Image (cartoon, rainbow, N blue to C red; front, side, top):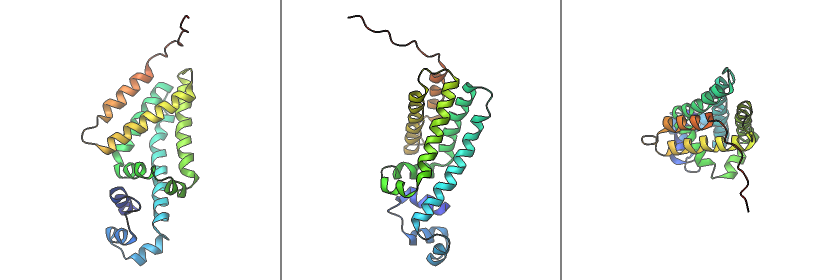
Length: 183
C-alpha cells in the first residue's frame, strides 16, 4: 500500500500500472494479485487505512475541555495530518477531479466528510455561532483549501501561520447581525 500511495500520488491513479506497483513494492505482479484484485482494490485499501488514521488524529479534539480548545486542536490536527501524509493528500486532491474514481471508493468517503463537517458544526454550536451549519462549511472549506495549497507548495506555504489566523478568526466574538440599510 505504501508503494502504491507514492506512485499514485506521483503519477496519478490512471498513470500507474500494476507493473509499476509491483516493481516499486519489490514483488512480482502475480504476488500483488494474491493480495489485491487490481489497482482499484488497492486504492480502496489505501483510503480505508487513511480514513482510520485521520479519524484517530482528529479524536483528540473530542477530548478537549472546551469548544474553543477543541476547535484549536481540530485545526492543528488537520494541518499536522496534511504535513505528515503529503502523498495521501496529493492523491486525494488529484482524485477529486475524477468523480468516477471517487465513486468507486464507495460511500465511506462521503461519510468521512460528513463526519468531519458534523464535528466542526457541533464545535461551532458550542461556541455559540449564529449559523453553525454554514460556518462549519466555511471552516471545512478553509481547512481543505489551505491543505491543498500546502500540498502544492509545501516549502513556501505558511501552513502554521494560516492555522493560527484561522483559529484567531474563529475565536473572535461573533459580529452583530447586519442592520438593514435605510431606504
